[in-house]
Image 1 (cartoon, rainbow, N blue to C red):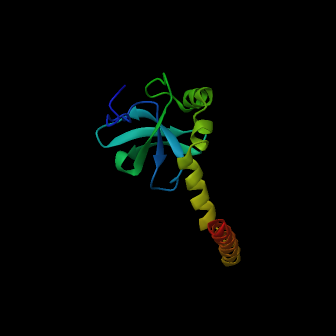
Image 2 (cartoon, rainbow, N blue to C red; image 1 turned 90 degrees about the vertical axis):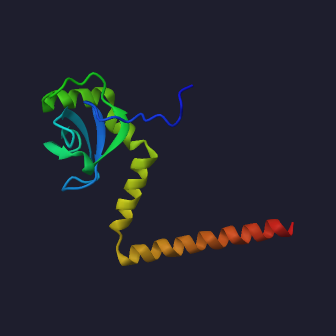
Length: 138
């Protein structure tokens, strides 16, 4: 069994990354080419991220890799490989992506919607408290 502390996410061609900054923050892209120690060429044809040079400090490496992606492949080739490996579906199924979706949805709530969420939480909390109290008595 491998050592659990071993680092497994490397910057490599085909690595799926999450963008932290810029107009496409929160979207995923794939590393197509490594430019130097500070930047990589990324492309996200299925997520709407245009092909561009991007600094590593604004990327988060995910555990997904598009296998056998040729270096400096064009956008149509990258799209074909991404669809073949079903990376977008795998990403959407992760708890990381689901949590980001929840956070984004909450950011867009209006005052009244936040108020309704607060009331729902209060009702659930009261119901749990009453159930726990009744179980303690018995």
